[in-house]
Length: 401
Image (cartoon, rainbow, N blue to C red):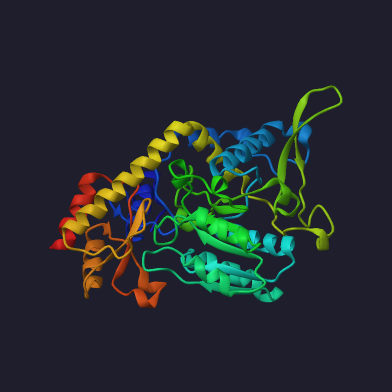
C-alpha cells in the first residue's frame, strides 16, 4: 500500500491504540504503580518550550540558569511534599530509587542486610534484588497482616539490619502505620526507608518526614506525566540533611557569586562521572530532569490547596466504589484505610467476567494472583479523578450481571 495521509495515519494509530487498551474509549480501574491523572494544558505547553527541550545537562551554570532554577524548584517542592530536609534532582524511576535508597542505608550503617515489606510493589522488590545480587547484600522479607499492612513486629527477629523498607500506600492500597514503623526502626537503631508509587497521597496524608522517616523515595509519574506504555518514570528521592553526602544522584544548590548575586549550580554530584568510581554513591547517568520539570510545573499549577483537593477527590471516589461493591455482596479482604486503590475478592470464575468486561472497554482491575499466587480471586482496583461516577456504577452493574 501507498503511504498514509496524515488523517489516515492518525486513524491507524487510534486503531492500534484501541487494540493495546489505551484508547480514550476504555474505562480503566487499574493502577498498581501507574496511575492515570488529568494533566493540565499548562504542563505540556511549558514543557515544550525550546529553552527546556534543547539543553543537555547544565554543566555550564553561566548559560543554564533557567534549567538549574527549575530543578532547584523541583527539589524544593519534593522536599516540602515529603516533609524531608533535602531532595535530589531526580532518579530514573521509583523502582531504582528504592534500590538506591537501600544501598545508601548500607553505606551509612556498614551493615549488609535489609528488610523489605512484601507489600512493596513486586517490580520494585525485583529491581532491588537485582541490584543486590552481585554485591552479596542480603534481602529479607517482612510478611503482611490480615488487614493488609506490614507486620513490623517481625523486625525484631532479624539481626544486623541496615534498614527496613515499606511502601505507603502499599501495593494493596493500604496506608501503613508509618509512625509506628519509624519508631520501631529508631528503637532498633535501623534506618527507615519509605517508598511510594502514588505521591498524590501525600497531598492528603501526613507526610513521611513528619512521621520520622530517614529516607523517602518513590515514583513521581502521577505528577504531569502520561502513562506512556510504562515509561519513562520519575524517581523522587529525599532524606535528612545528615545523610546528604551519601545520597545518590546530584543536587542543585543556590549560592552567591563574588558580586553578591544569587545563582544556581550543580553541587554534591557524587556520581562516577564526577569523582573517582570507588567514591561515587551512584552510577546514575543523565537523570530524568525533563520529567522532573513536568512534575514541578504540575505541582506549581495545583499548589498546596489544589493538591489536597485532588487527593481528597481520589480518596472519596475510591471509597464510593468500595462501598458500592460491598453493597453488591463482594468482600473487601483488607480493613486498613486505603487511598485510591483497594483489593476486592470476587467469586471463582471471575476471570471470564474480567475478559468479558475488557471486551466492553472496561479494565476491571489487576488480578493479584499474577504476583501473589495465594491471592487467587482477589483483584486490585484503582479509581482516580479520571473515572466518573457513571463509570463506577456501570462497573458494579456489569460485575453483578
